[in-house]
Structures are given as C-alpha cells and as structure tokens.
Picture 1 (cartoon, rainbow, N blue to C red):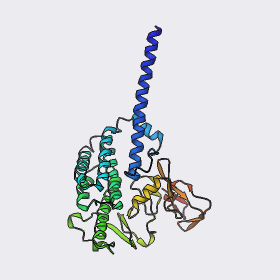
Picture 2 (picture 1 turned 120 degrees about the vertical axis):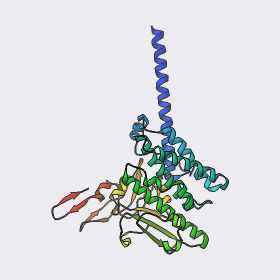
Picture 3 (picture 1 turned 45 degrees about the horizontal axis):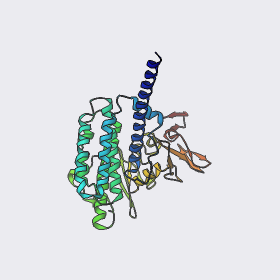
Picture 4 (picture 1 turned 135 degrees about the vertical axis):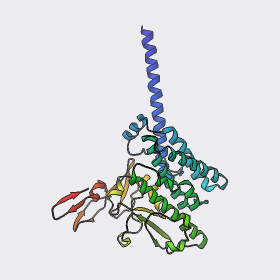
Length: 336
C-alpha cells in the first residue's frame, strides 16, 4: 500500500513537472514573441516582458484557442523574414513563407475564435515587421509590390468580424505602402519627397484610405491616415502613441487616426526598453509591465471642452480613459 502511494506520488509529481515545464516554455515563447513585436531581432535587448500581464498569459495558456503551435511557426517565419532583410539570397524564401502563412490564416480566419484572433495577431506582427525593416534601411527594402503580396487587399475586404480592427489594419497597410515609396524616393534622390504626388505611386498600389496626410520636417516624415478629413495643423509633428490597436489609441484626441513616421519603430523599441516616449507632451507614454500606459507630465495643461486642467508632479502612469472623456458643459454629462 505504502509502495503504491509512493509510486502515485512520484507519478503525480512528474505530471505537475511536465505541466510546469510546458507552461514555462509557453511563458518563454510569449516573452520572445512580445519582444519581437516591439524590437524585432535586436539581440541586445533581453526578452523580459510578458504581453499584458502574467495572469493574461496563464489564461491564454489554458485556453483551447491559444493556437500556440501555429503561432510558433508564424513567429519563426517572421524572424527569418526580418533576418533575411540583410541577406538577399534568403529574402525570397522568407517572403514566400510569410505569404503562405498569411494566406492560410486568412483562409481559416472564420473557422473559429482561435483562428480569428490568430489572423489579426499575424497581420499586426507582419505590419510591425515591415515597418521595422524599412525604417532600419539595412539592405533590402520591403517594396510596395512585396507589401501587396504579403498583405493583399482581399484580407481586409473579405474578412468578417471586428470591423474596427480590420479598418485600422487596412489603414496601416496603406501607410506602409506609401512609406515604402518614401524610402524608394529617398534612395534614388537622396532626400524625401515634398508631397505624396511626388512619389509616383503606381495605380495598383493606390490606397483605399480616403484621407492620408503627409508631413515632412527636414529629412523626417509622418503619415496620418483617417476615416475622415482632419486638420493637420492641430497635430504635433511626430508625437503619437505608436500602436495600431489597444487602449492607448482611444484617449488620444485623434483616436480614429493611424500614424506612421520615420521614427515609428524606434518609438516602439524605446517603449519596450522602459523609456518615456513623447516626453514633455500630453502624449507621453511608457510601458508598464506588458502594457503601454500614458504618463502625466509635470506642469502640463490639458484643455477639455474649454476647461484647462493643470497637473503637477513627475511623470506618472495614468488612466488612458481620462483623455477619452468628452465633457458636455451645459448639462454636465460625460460620454466615453
């Protein structure tokens, strides 16, 4: 009897060890994947953060919809693609792998909750990777033709579900194509174009986003995509939260816009490293754990429907929803 209990205890312990090791492996993968999302293949930065929180990863691990096997394959192909940007002979095979991954994810995106979320996750990762490669300017440029090959328009026109997310990823795709034209123009002339009209964008690469604004300051540039026309004079150059989705975009005044600039990927890497991005502005933000959060800046003034609020103190995390609140002075109602 005692021997049987001992054997059972050993087996039970071994079972828990297998589960723990599997979870540890998943945590390690999530850290690597999350670091890649913000920093790419930069080995000088340690994979120290988990996305959102430890609890989030635990829940994700136990879910039948976590798609971890598929995600690992996609992650490996994304890494190969980014590494291939410095080795021309490896670029085409890496590009083909990524095209196949996106096509398969799109084909299966309506097969269930896990497939849908994986499709959006992959599109996000691909867009961040293209932005990093082109901003790095280290050899190979992901040109408009290749962007169109990886992210064909059908992905955004024939995918049902979260329309808000689909529209934002579609706008970022359009900005990446225009951004690629900017890099091509600079490579051939030595300077960036004065306007979008100077870029000679091919008809097949014409963007569907109705309102795209291009701003240049010296050799730095910024693109703004919006579902409706905006006054660019109200936008502070290169001051924005470098995300496509998530809470932070909601409390920015121009929450419907998507931004891409010549420092987009640098901002994201700085966030991961724990630095404050847009320091000294209302859009100062940093990464707290695995989330990007806003900071209150010393002696900043926030204008809210004619009211000025002065906030004193050093930079501190704050709730993004504060800046997403619309105050109606006449009846003192608030809307979120």
